[in-house]
Length: 109
Image (cartoon, rainbow, N blue to C red):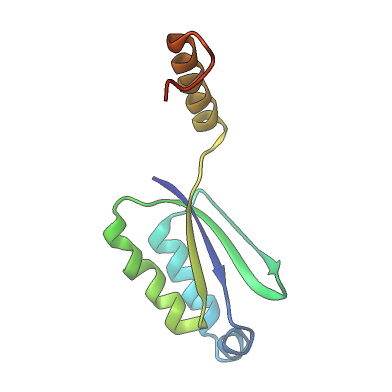
């Protein structure tokens, strides 16, 4: 499943990790592990933040993905299922098909 992982790094822990060289290593290991289709970095809410789009193959992978970020940058990690444009179009077609089957534009519920 396509996921967006938002990683908000603690400012003090992130600064220490930059100074000691561990932050670039942590991010590189994360990128190598996830092989993301996209990754963006910038400030959000006044803290260093990464937005990483990747394919989550199994939910049991979540601890091993997020734990290094918790430990290495005191990060807050959020996982959100996301769609690309093609996924959205497919989903909307499915909704439209269901509305046509009920004949009244409702979802049939």
